[in-house]
Length: 162
Image (cartoon, rainbow, N blue to C red; front, top):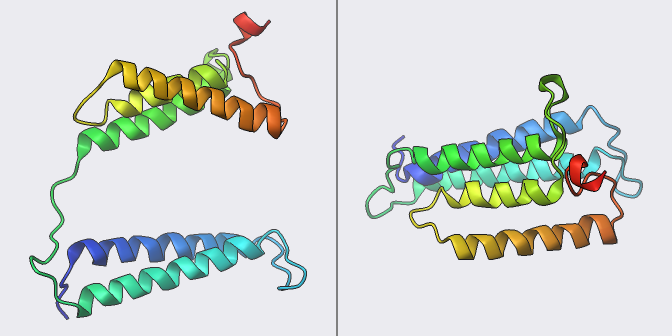
């Protein structure tokens, strides 16, 4: 059987893999029933739906002819590395690394760093736009998580907040 759309085929496989992993992971929790859902019910249903969607996309890639075959181009290493680095730095700044003596730097600094590092993944970098976006994201996150949801985590570095 010939693959008629590489992009759809591999994205369908990815959806199936992630869906199966979620569904399998959800079986370690109490699933319950439709009337009395347990903590594993939603991830199980979501995983199954995602796997079915992936199967449909993969099937479509094998059956429906595309104009150019939707070939997959080369890996975009620069965006991949910057986005992964941004998420890693966000986690380290938010929670710190006690084993290495790095204290938590707080949510605001972590979001600003995340935004600036992720913005480097694109072809253009406009400092003013990234600064405005990072400030809006930090303020919005503070309002949503600290003020409205009352979550307890460091907002500022300990040497500032005390």
